[in-house]
Image (cartoon, rainbow, N blue to C red; front, side, top):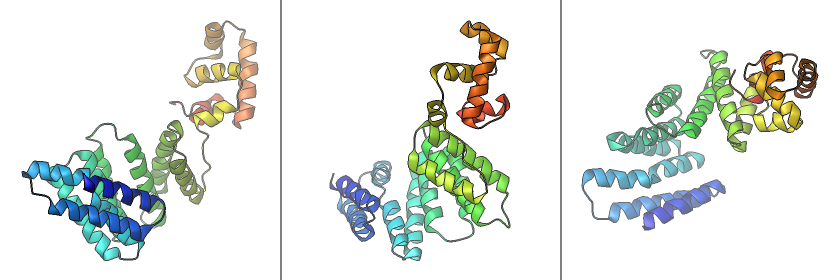
Length: 253
């Protein structure tokens, strides 16, 4: 379908920073959809959600300074998504409106998006993006926000971005952590890269809650050897005890 192609080209233009061209292509995709014979309502709404031209155009309008138009278009997209869309589509529409709108209720929109998404499946990446968005807004309104909530949101997003090697999201999270005065945590891949194979095995077992004696029995080595490996692990990772080991490695505490 031509609308799909135009929308895809609009996304490419947006990614390249060609905002005017992106807006032109998103709008053209919408025009193509509007010109098609209207199928039954559920099918029509599904087509609109599969080619979310309003969302792309709304963000492009905001980037060109036409904020009010962008917010209006984002509201239209949300209305379409809420009519029959799955939770994932509604969450994206709420996120788009929170980005396009400049009102004080943006945090409420993101909280609604997060709550809506919880009813769906396979949306971990969007959840991490929403948490990062919400943390950013909370940091920008320190008079009414709880910095501990922002920190908790960022730590969760940081862990997910690290485990999936999502570098852009991870860097964004780290910039926000810096604004809170908090340092980044090493993701598992970064932490493990600093360790030898033997140190990784010992560190993984220790992070999983095993005692030194249990680790020694598991690996068929002496307790002294386990202690020696752990001392090297702590030094390389910049920590002082096993209580921080799980968090540093990105393993469950």
